[in-house]
Amino acid sequence: MSEGDVKLQLDDATRLALQTTVIALSDTKLLLGYHYGEWTFGPPAIEAGIAACSMAQEEFGHTRLFNRILKREFDIEIDPLNDTRPPEVFASIAFLDRAFENWADLVAANLVVDQALSLVVSAFADQQFGPIARIADKMLLEERFHYAHAEGWVRLMEEQGGAPREALHQSLSRAIRDTSAFFGPPGHDTALVTAGLKHTDDDALRQRLLGRLAKLLPEPEAVGLAGGDQGWTLAEPLSWEDWDSARRRLDHGGPDAAILDELRGTKNVAFKTA
Amino acid sequence: MTDQVFEVFCRVAPGDPMSHIGTLNAPHIDLARVYAWKIYDEEDWSEMWVIPRASIASAHPAHDDAARVEGS
Image (cartoon, rainbow over all chains, first blue to last red; front, top):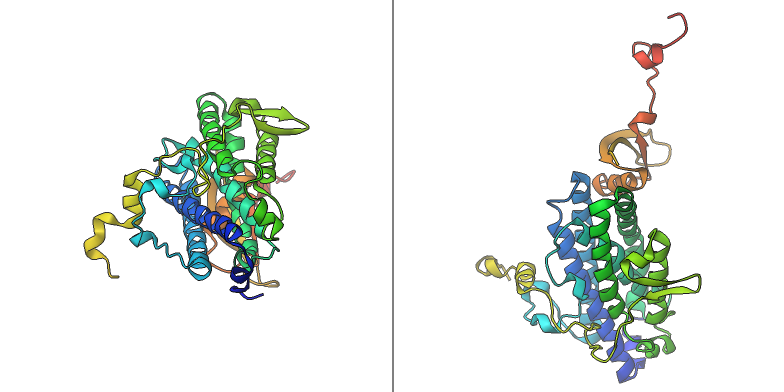
């Protein structure tokens, strides 16, 4: 199947659902890459800074791939350096809206946000939408190291106990709620599964994520999870009335203007070459 | 948890000699593996290994550990 085939076969609603998913992947990976890049300096170990820098490069690379898909398949052009969209239209996970306060925020994004994006990408693997299916394996291979990094730090901070563990739990609690919102209300993406573009719907992916987190964390209840052998959910369920399907989030704010300025090189417009 | 020193060894192609390419600090082996891959990925290695320095024993007779032979 060529890349253009799917475009012709999808009805408008399915096509829109696919488009918003790709935009959300692109926007969230851009913001995630920004935060990883920011923590090249200031992490608790030099090696962790190098790892963060490397993960930033990979997230920016993935963003570029998704932007290429948006251009080819949907005629939507997102160029991070020339992007003029206001913060309130970004489809990025709310946990990434502001500068991270500490290393615990980075580890939480690494564990929860990064893994959520990988789960969504994995649902497109070996499915009918070629543009994502073709890049999924390589992308997920890179993401395996992101997960290993997050898991290593979570283990360490849990063992440290005290303030590091408390900070981690606070960060994870926020990341888990914001990322759960990203997966949307149950059934919102049925069209994508029915059309054969994804093999697993977002509700099942969310349950898979929460189950993995509960398995990793010694005390899942401390980060706002509830459940057990039958599966894990949020102890305080989300209310979906205000969910914005175009942005896949409940929080109606957006990334800090200062972060977008840095991503866009606003202070260096005079030096731009194109 | 205290950091340990890990030694990083790589092989470019199967059959090539294993080369020592550097060291790193990490609190445990799992993070050492991630750090090694992220720090030393400039070549297309066919193998990469991390080994805790504390697990490496000297075989040179001039070194104390290796010379600790009965009667020497």
